[in-house]
Every structure is written in C-alpha cells, then in structure tokens.
Image 1 (cartoon, rainbow, N blue to C red):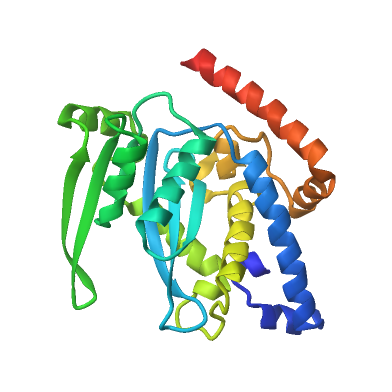
Image 2 (cartoon, rainbow, N blue to C red):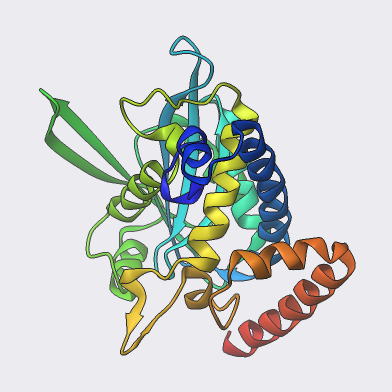
Length: 280
C-alpha cells in the first residue's frame, strides 16, 4: 500500500495495527530494497536519458528538498535518484550513479531542463562524449507560454542521428521524465500535493523513494511496455531480469544475506556484459 500512495496512518487504520509497526516495517523493507537496487540495477544500456527534479520539503516549508530523478527512455527504467538540496554536488552525484551502473556503447543523448548545474556535471563526467539537449519552459498564469529547445553539447548532425535512432523522441523533450515524476508523486504519500503527510526527515523520504523505485522497476508492469499479450517491467525491457519480481522474492533475496544475492548479481552482470560486448 505504501508504494501506491497510501500514508502510514491510513495503512495503520486499514490493517488495524500500530503506526509505529507500519513505520518499522517500511524502514526494514526500504533497507532491503536499497540493497536489491544496488546489486541488481546494473549493466543497462545508456542510449537516451532524461533528468529532472521534484520540489518538496522536509520538516517544514522553510526547508525545501529536491528529488533528482532520471529515466532511461527506451526501457522506462528509473535509473537513479538523489535526495537533497538543489546543488551541484547532488547533480553530479545523480549522473555519477547512473554512469557507474549503466553501460555506454555510443554517445548517449541526455535531455535536461534549464538548471545550470546539469551542463557542468555533464561536461566533467562526459567531456565531448554525449549529446546534451536542453528544454526551458516559460510559465505565465500557471500555463506554459513558450518552450525553448537548444543543443548544449554535441554537433547538430549528432543530434539528428540520435533523434533518428530514438524509438520514442522526435524532438528534444523531457516528457518521459516528467511522466515518471507524476508516477512518483502518486506513489509516494510524502509528495502528494496538499497533503498533511509530508516528510518530517529526509532519511524517511529517501527510504520511501528506494522502495518505490524497486517496485517501479522490478514489480509493476509498465503499460507502455506491452508487446502482444506480455506487459514487461522496466527491468525486463532493460535486460536486467527475465520476469517480474514480487516483494516476497525481493525480501527473501535480501534476507539470504549478501553472499547469495551478490553471487546472483555478479553472475548476471557477467552474462549481460558479454552479450553487450557481442552486440557492440
């Protein structure tokens, strides 16, 4: 229920248990999901990325908090997330986490909004090795008045080739990561608008997002990834796994102490990297 946007208080009322019990179970589940994400979300191909941020607050509205999100467009995989202030350090950390777990076979196409630190982080981590497009929206009376698209890194012919090779994008856009942001807001009670269930501590918000990311990537079938009678999860589409997981399977894998889970992850990563090398 907590990954479908139900608050702890509501879960406690529905299940007729203590609020503290719900909080304790969610904390343990988030720890298992974090370890699972770390071991399993590996060796996915980075071709087209979109990065964005969600504004929230923790403890009070005088303490703004930002959730940096990212999506691999072709597989709809939620690649990484960072929770903190809107600083260069967190922007750099988000992109570094993506590059550490993903595989680059050709220059990736990265699209961001107008936040200034994206360009700096991309130049430092991928100097001359990517196409960076930027989308800036001008708002007027809570409506988008104009949209400016520009190429910040790379050559125009590289951009044309990236858009031609893309299965989803015809122009520079951030539509897919913005749709992911909506899914995150609907799936996390802390981030829903006009709700009293805001986060009191940043750690609890980060835990909830790790649990939701595990659910989104490995458990929940994605309606945009329906092929015939099969609806895949983002992890299936990215080639990380061959079937949907359940929370029971995820928690059992995390409970089997690190040895078994690490062995499975390393074996899968070796097979995945071999197949990517043959494809290259």
